[in-house]
Each structure stands twice: as C-alpha cells, then as structure tokens.
Length: 112
Length: 109
Image (cartoon, rainbow over all chains, first blue to last red; front, side):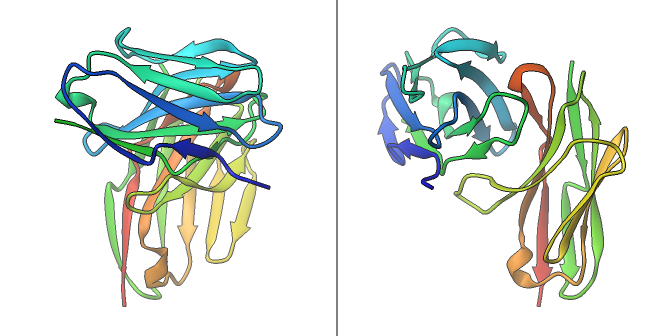
C-alpha cells in the first residue's frame, strides 16, 4: 500500500513569489491535513480537508490556502512569500474519523 | 484552546539506560493520543495510537501508556538507532490534531 506522497520535495523561491505544494493521500483516505514545521515552532496545524471541504483551519494568514480534489489529492498554496515561510511543509492523511493520521516526507521550502 | 506539552525537551541516555518521555495534554473531547518518531529531515513516522485511559501498547523497546491527563513513552534498554525526536499529539473533534514540540532523544553507545 503506497504511503502519502508529497511533491516537490525541495524548492527555493524568492520573496513575493507564490508556491503550490501537492499531496496524494493513502488510497481510501478522505482526510488530508497540512502542517508547517520550523525549528522554533514545532508542528503547526494549517488546515484539514475532508471530502473536498475544509473542516478545520489553524491560525495562519490568508496567504496560506488549500484545496482538495474529488480524488482526495490536495494542494496548498502560499502567496506573496516571506522569508519566515521557509519551513518543512507536511501533509498527513487519514480516514477522517478520528483515527491515526499518516505523514508524507514533506516539502522543504526555502524563501530567499 | 487545546494544548499538548512534552517533557523533557531533550534527553541523553547511555545505551541500555531505560527512561520515560512525558506528554501532558488538555484536548477537548480527546478521541485519541498519537506518538510519532521523527528523524531529521523526514516526516513523522507513526508509532502508536491510544484511545482510552489505562490503554497500553508496545513495539520492540517502546511502550506507550495513557491516563486521563498524561501519556508516557517508556524506552527500555535503548539503542543508538532509537535516537530521534519523539512527538506526541492529541486529536479532538473532526481530525483537529494538536502536537507537542517533541522530545529529542540521543542514545550514546
């Protein structure tokens, strides 16, 4: 059974640009959640989608957005990038029923 | 607001020296408590899910327990390959997961 797949693994962007990250969940999982991980802040919850609907949202500015497609694949977008957006962005998938969530390897974003 | 607090922040053990990691939680309507292991530069790897107070789960040298306010990850006779950051997280309603900041474990040969 394939795990959670995130692309791209590494990317470098310039301040002011935007970026789109992709996540393919484990087959059969309908929930996808996104997290930002930085050394100082740990894992911070961004948002969670279930069957194409955003169910939960963390405390991030509107520059951070996401969506989920009918096949459960999800994308997150960050517009007007700032240096502080440099982080590891992690995607996790689950059944959406309060059970275990499984993580991908993450996308490393560096903003210069 | 949901909170998960892990202690200690860092732990250094000699190979074979058993110890415990602590996770205190305040999660409204807790549905489950997760433990993950994370190696540098990688995504968290699932270890255990505990659903109710009194529950215990084991995997190799690791044993996780749950009370109404805390969870413990016991490491028995650790080896250098157990060195990693261990993350605890609580899940409340609708898949909202709150993570602790982790315990960085170093096991010295």
